[in-house]
Image (cartoon, rainbow, N blue to C red):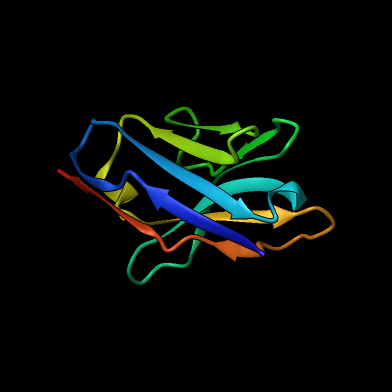
Length: 118
């Protein structure tokens, strides 16, 4: 089992920046992909960004060029640098991990609220 603890959400004005962080503990050596999803009221959960243990990245179309995901394998942490934030980025952001051999997220963080005011 992997446990995830997120930090860094909050309120920011449009055009501003925030950084989210997520620390993993437990069976960390089984982690392949780390990433973030987000969900806002009335919308489906959507992939924001993901990064594999080898450093390969994947971004949702709506955040490409504005968000950057990074990972510290030694510390089992993943970060999401969010720049040029827009009101439509307002959502609860969830950290997740996918284990080696798995295709779906196996663990989720508790979620952190990001609110972007116009």
